[in-house]
Length: 448
Image 1 (cartoon, helix red, strand yellow):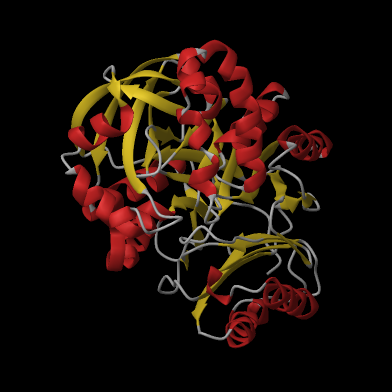
Image 2 (cartoon, rainbow, N blue to C red):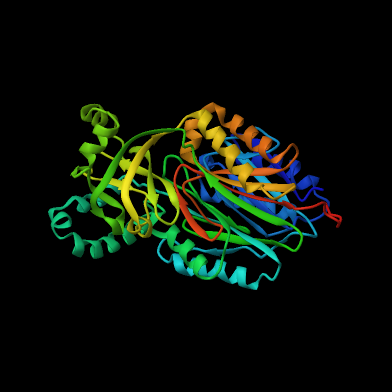
């Protein structure tokens, strides 16, 4: 029995892509959909273009129960993934409910207020089984981003570390305001949800790979710095969650010796200057590194690392290095760094490993669900780069795990952060999944 229908279309024109996705997905539904997830790629650029497209989808579908955003690639179960187009997932079922989607337009600076809107949705939802889904803005690196961080290398920051950690909180706030990352606010959302009894929710960040713009959708509204979200609930359907990353190839371990935990900035690795030791460990000559990155304002050298967290196990994060900085930026929330032993490990990933981990995530999320009805996945955009032209193969692995004809959507994000089985999971270069379905054969007819 079909609860969701999906589709993906590719076109250089957002108007043509929108027209096609309306025809392919919304046209298949008998009546007005209960809820839709709409995802565009960021190549259309202009906010006004997305506003027109979303307004058209609302008009043609007859509903404003929509959330979504822009992602460097989008995929659905029945079409080839695209890096220039649109994916849409529409739901219509008497056995699945959605709270009216909410938004909070200042989430970079006030993540707690955004989280409170999600908490309210959970508390108002009285169904037996429920889970959440929310999206935030992702990293945005303007040309002067790394210049703004130079004060983290100052003598004062090194010498008066304890005091500067307080100053670092203000710097971190400014970094969040300017959009330099999601570490500064996403983990706070998870903690707030957890404190209020939320056991499972799927979260991710919108992003453009050049890190210059990203948008979030709620109804006909198009935002740039907002959180958007809703809850799924049912008395009949079960919801399964999981996450994983490619653990197949590990390399050298290292110690995060000193840094400013309040801004996730590492001064020393193995008690040596961070940038110098970073390049030494991954075996890249400094002159080659500087030549490659010195003229590119928003680019940096990203490398996957893992950190052993006492509460969450082995968590992947990204190390960010740039010639203008002496230290290394890490995507480790302060709360996780506090309860870790600070011994990390560099990893390399492969296209095959990425595919296998996507299969593992989907398979684990669907455990205990005999009849999957649909799946929703947040997949890191760095994994997209690793997979390259094998992204379609990754899609096929998810299909194999869920079963043929099970509709699903994959959004390639700028951050993956979920609550899974009462644990806040904030991880980089990973895939997070939600699978809904029946633990037994459904008795009630689905209106579709």
